[in-house]
Structures are given as structure tokens and as C-alpha cells.
Amino acid sequence: MKRTLELPYEEKKLLEIRKGDEVTLSGVLYVGRDMVHKRLYDAIRFSQPLPFQFESNGIYYMGPSPKKGSFPFGAAGPTTSARMDPFSPLLIENGLRLMIGKGPRDRSVISSIKEHKGLYLQAIGGCGALYASCIRKAEVVAYSSLGPEALMKIEVEDFPTLCIIDSEGEVL
Amino acid sequence: MLEDTIASAIVDASMFLPEHVEDLIKKAAKSEKNSYARFALSCIVENINLAREKELPLCQDTGMLYVFVEVGKDARFSYKALSGALEKGIKKGMKEGAFRESVVSDPVFDRKNTNTNLPPVINYFFVDGSDITLTFLLKGFGSENCSGVRMIRPTDGKDGVIDAVIDIVRSAGGKPCPPMFLGIGVGGTMDRAAILSKRALVYEGKKDKRYKELEEEILGKVNALRIGASGLGGAHTALSCSVLYEPTHIAALPVAVSINCWADRFVKVVVKGGFDEEDA
Image (cartoon, rainbow over all chains, first blue to last red):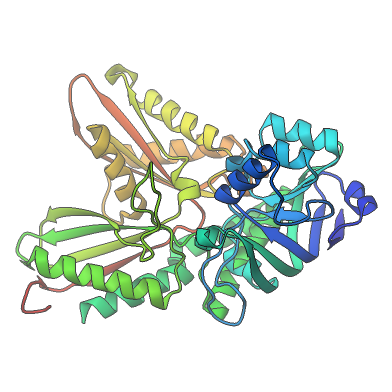
């Protein structure tokens, strides 16, 4: 089924989405990959403040190539989600329930999504130009020393994804 | 200038796929029956068209640059001149093409970004002829992380090779951005088989009939895994399989598999007559 999801998301809308749904995203997304996950994970463990509000927001696993042409980035497709698996359950538990990346997740992430009513959407791997063309604005929020791996906030429009794990923990 | 030719070749390779690669993807998109995989393939085709139209990199992982230098035995050749032109050309291309800074200088401790995408991985080969051929592969690492080597028994033969490949591809699953392109190296030593597997990805020359049949058989069995485009199922797990071999030891049968994502980005530059200090 085709659906749209406005971001930050409304609880009810998130829960409606089922595995296999084509979900088009519009609105604000946070962007972070390997090192951002390690830092968010450590911030929670050591009870330090988080650089953005987890509730109602989603995180996109991506590290862009520099600006080229008319969009904020040259290419901005998803990176492999499996590398975030060791960190995701703690983040989900603390409210970061919407994740967008590519490829399968491990069992601990699936059960954490089920327990906390999360959602994992897949962006199509390698489609850097396509996703760059869906991004309207971008700014660095934290960890700027990480360069292309910094934590960013972006605004997206008509960003195509597919639901792989829904809030019931059902996996496509 | 050779450095300018190199720069524009790699910039083009980041935006435009080799024609046969694009044809294979578009054919797969037309024939795929699984609706999820069809969605993925339609995004991929749209991405290919957008990258060309807007002159954007196909993928933000513009890769670590992997270079084969084939020096003809009768070519003019200066290592110093050629490696200088390669470094300058690559540096220039990375800037002009707005490549992502994807290379760190130390793999274990600092992981400090070199901020230049240098150094590339370069392999020199000496071949017949009087030209120098440079092949640039923009190697993404989502797929590189899924590549592997198996040292199987010499008595395992063809079936052992197939099993090793299937095992590596199965554990890769949806991670390497399928549909994949498979480069396979058999024989040599552990390291040599791995280099051969990369070479197989870009090889366009003649092949032994038995090895061609082996390629077909592997491709059939890989697609029977039904990992499919983006790991979503369907008929297109891999679009191409290329096998190269070399002599090996009586005790060994090394099998290496280099997995490439659907963005199988490579380009060749032929330097007629060779390259030395006078050309630099």
C-alpha cells in the first residue's frame, strides 16, 4: 500500500504503516551514521544531554558527498543499517523509534522495534542522486569534526522508502 | 595532459555507468515480477537517469579508487612520471567531481580522513603490446565489506568453487546493494586470487570456454538464492559474473569473490605508445 508520512511524525500515522508499504516521507529528518551512533550511545550511557529530541523524529543513515549542482548535497543515498545494529536498541528504548537505512537488521533491533513500537524503512541503496534531489535544506547539528559523518538535520520532500519492519515487529 | 584525461574519466565514471551495465539494469527492471524488487529497480533506473541529467554522482559512496595499470612491454614507461600523473589526475578529479572524502590514513587507531581521497589502491601489471592501459574502478565499500576469500581443498573442484561463492553471496544478502556484479579469482595465492577477483570485475578480454560455462552456472545458482534487488526478493540477485584464473599450488584452490553493487563504475584510459618523463 502507498502511504505518506509527515515528519516529525504523528504517533497514529507511524502505527498505521505495515511491512511492504511504500512510504513517501516529507519534513524534517536527522542524519547520522557509524560515529554519530557511537556518540549518541555513549551520551545515553553516561547520562549526557542529547543533541536533538528523539521523540517524533527519525534518523537517516547517510553520509553525503559534497554539494554539486542545485541541491544541498551531490549524492545522499542510504548506508548499510547493519552497522548501526549494536547501537540501535538503546536508542530506540530512549525514543528514537524511526530509522531509515538500507539492508536487513539483526534480531535485537527487530525485537526492540516490536517492544517500543518503532519503524524501520528502507531507502534504496546506491540511489544517491535520487535522494539528493529530495533534500531541500541541510544543516550540521552536532559533531561537526566528523566531516561527512557529522550529525545533520535535513528537510526532505517526496522521499521514497519501503517499510521493512513495522511497529508490530513484522518483517518483510 | 594525461592528468586532465584521468580527472575527467573518473568524474564521468562517478555519474555515468558503462553502457553494458546500464543495459543489464534496465533489462532487469523491465522483466522483474516481484513488486518490491520492481520498486527498488525503478528507483535505481530513476537514479541513473537523474545522475546523468543533473550531472550528480550516482552514489554518495564515490568509493576508494582502485587502479589497474597495464604496461605494455614495448611501451615507453617511467614509473615516476606515470605515478605523478596518476596522483595529480586523481586529486583533480576528486575535487571537480565533488567526491566524498572517504579515505582514512590509519585503519585501526586514528582513522583520520586524508581529505584528498588519496591514496588509491594501485596494481601494476606488465603485458604484451606498446600502450599503457589505466583502468579505474570506483569501489564502494558497502559491497566491499561483503567480499571474501576461501581457501578450499584442491579436490573440491568446480563444485567447491561454486559452494564457496554461494556461501559468500548468501551471507552478503541484501547488504551490498544488489543486483550485484561478481568478480571471481581462482588459483594463485590467497592475495593473488583477491586481486584477480577485482580484475575480473573490469576484464573485457577473451576467456576459456570452461570458465565461461562456470560463470553461467554460478550466475544461475546465485540468482536462485532470490536475494533480489535491494535484498527484497525476485529474480535479480546478480547481473553478471566474471571468473579469472591463474596457476596455483598442488595443495591449494584459493577462491576470492569481489562483490560490487549495481553501480559497477569503471572506466579505461589507453595511453598510446606509453608515458615517460618527456610526456609529463
